Image (cartoon, rainbow, N blue to C red; front, side, top):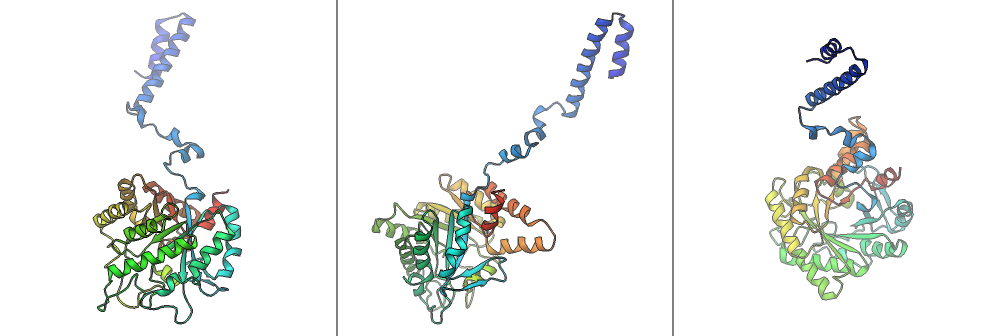
Length: 370
């Protein structure tokens, strides 16, 4: 029965005005209930819009909300003290020498910068050799910058990337055999020595990115032997995939291989099972934090890392190619830069990361303050 016919029927059946009002009220209630049950098909749990009708209520729907403390900012440290060179393929990013670091970082720290990750860039003639001996040079860019930043910014958390590719004449991430393949045993011994040098210099965290088998165990054992394992975080690039998204980084760091590629030690893009095995291995070898790299193309791996390492923080590196693509598309008018920077990063957090290495960090420091 429709609402109008129900009211007409009630009118004909009674002449009492008060009773009529009561009947009409009940009729309206009936009609409202009937309409509601039709609109939600009898399932009240399908009504979701009210739960995110306000901006704050929308924010509450996120399991993780981006904060400044989640961000790590990559820095390229040149061995030329006064250098400040724009990297053309990496928008708004520079290589900086030691004398340029403090003036650059001071306003960022004032805005809430909590952490940086350091990549050394040796440019001086003869700085590179087959063993990457400049990687742990006490006068080299990384060790010098660790000491400078510890003095200048006592509350800044300093992560030191540990690899040899920037320092080897061949551009690979370890020591090579005569046939050009990686000598894993010699490589992890060398990598762990470099990690120890950075830890001794004052790095709060060492982060091996070389992908040699067993390097997490080797570093952990040396940290324990030196009596500093209790004060140095070991963050493993556990699931680092090979691919085409590292080009701008290699321009910045001068770390492109002089021959071949890194497919035999970085993970194949389709290797989800390999990534899970690598994550499990590194947790068992003593990693304190697990990293996935790149980020946006590997959200399933971030989710896997959080599942496997449920009691560990998970980091994700939004690599140079991801950053450059977002900038290029925004410049072409495809979308708004800020909106996409947030959307991409929120997707990384939703997948399970609680730490994001991001070139957008300076912008986020402003955006998160407004």
